[in-house]
Length: 628
Image (cartoon, rainbow, N blue to C red; front, side):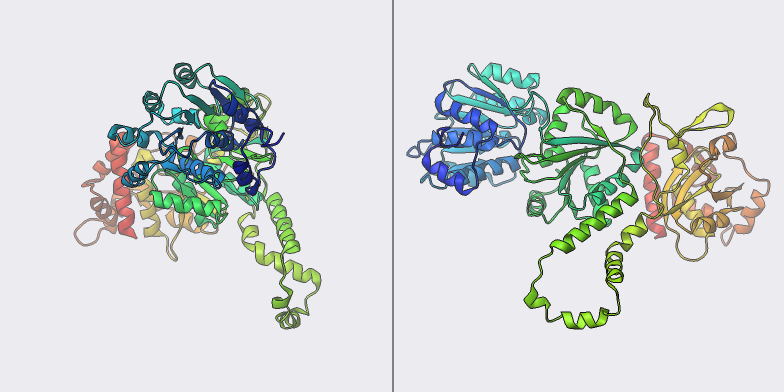
C-alpha cells in the first residue's frame, strides 16, 4: 500500500516524499481513505508516535478550498507544544499548496497578533481549548464554515480538565460537519463526547484498547524510596547513549531531580509549569537538538513534545492512572523502533505494577539495579566503541603526531590503553568503590528478605537496618539525643561546630528518632566527630556518640531514656557561661527565638506536625544562614 493508493493528492505526495515518508503506517491506512471518501465520523484509538498527524492532516489539507479565506477545519489539542507541532507539520505537508494558511492559536502568545491573522484569513485553525474559547467570546473567530473538526489527544484533554471547554466549543460549529477524535485510551467521559457530538462514528483501534506501544519493553527496579535517586543515576550510567525523558509527579520534584543530575555532571534539564514560556522553549530546543541527554519533566509539560528516537522513558515513581503511564511509555518505541519504559518503584508502589500489567496486557520485567561492576564494564566498552568509530581528520592531526608519539613512545600499547581508560574513568571508579546493592529482595510471597531479629523476637526490617548505614562515601554516626530531648538538626550542627576542631565537617543525611539520632559525615570523619561529641552535653544531658552499628537496635537501648539529665549538668553549664551570665547554647537558643530551655524543649515536642513544625523549620533555616 502506498500514499498514492490511499488517494493522497499529487502536491501533497511531493511534499511528504521530500520529508522521507515512504510507506503508510497502520493508522494512516485506515483513517486517510475514510476521511476522503466516507461521510460518518471516526474515533481512532492510537498511541503517541503512530503517525496520527499525517493520518488526519493529509485528508484535511486535501479537502480545503484555498479560494475561501475562512476557517474550514478546526484541530483542537491540549497543549501549546502539541498545537505548534501540528501546525508545523501541516505547513510542511502543504508547502506546494499556494494560498493555504494554517494558524496555531494558543495561550502564552499575543492574542492581538492572532486576531490580526484571523482577520487576514485562514483556512485551518489549530487551537488549545482555552484560547479558542476566549476568541469565540470576543467574537473574533467564526466557525460557521467549519466542515472538519479534529480532537487530538482527547483523553489528555480530559485529564487536564478541558471537557466542559470542548463541549462549549463544539456547540459553535455546524451540526453537519465531519468529526475525528484521536485518543490513546477510551475512558467513559470521552465516550460521552462521542455519543453527544459524533454521527455514527467508525472506531479504528491501532493495536489493542488501552495497551502500550508494541515495540516498548516495560521493566522496573524495586528499591527503597530513599534509594530512588541513586538507582536513577545507575540506570543512566549503565546506558551511556541514553536519550530519554524522566517523568516526575510534581513540579518541585522535577526541579529537584534535574538540579541533582546537573550537579552530579549529567547532561540534563527540567521542564515544568513553573518555567516561563521562553525557558520552556529553550529547554525543548536543546532537547530536540540532542544537546541534552535527559529531560526531567512533568506529564503536562511534556505533552506535545514530539521527539523521535527516544531510547528510554523513566518513571521516577508510577502515575496514579494507567492512561498516564500509557502516554509516557508511548513516547519511546516509535516508528517501528524499540524503546524501554523504566519504572523505579519502592515497595508501596509495587501493587500498581500489577494493575498496569492487567490494563495494557503486557508483563513488566523485574530487573536488578545495575551493579558498579556492570556499569564500569558497560562504560569501558562504550568508550572503546567510540574510539574505534571516531572520525579522524588525517590532514589536520598528522602534524601533531610526531611530537606526541615521541613523548609517549616509552609506553607500551597496553600501558597507553590503561592510561586512556583511567583518565576517563577514575572518577567513576572512585564513586562506585564499595557501593552497595540497592535492590529490595523479596521471597515468593513478596515479603522482604534480609530482616534481622530484634531483642524480644521482633524483626528488624531491612529498611530499619539500612537507616543505620551511611550513604556511599559517608560514615554513619550515632548520638544518644533525639526528638524526645528537644534535639533537632540545628542542635546537632551546633554541637559539631562547637566541639569538632579542624576543617569544616560536611553533614549528610540526618535521621532524628525519639531517643537518639543518626547522621552522615564524609568518609573518614566519622570517628573524629564521634570522639569529639562524646561526653559533651545537651542542656545537662551527657552525650554519647559512636560509629553506627547496622545490627544494633538503638531504639531498644534508648527506650525510656529521652530527656534525662546528668547529675553534673548544672556544674558544666556554669563552667561554660561567659560574660552576661549565659552559656553559648542558651545564647544560641535566644537568637533562635526561645527565651528558656524549657520553652525550646516544649516547642520541639510540639513540632511533630502542623504549623509548629513549619515554624521550627523556619527557625532552623534562619539559624543555619546565620552560622554560615
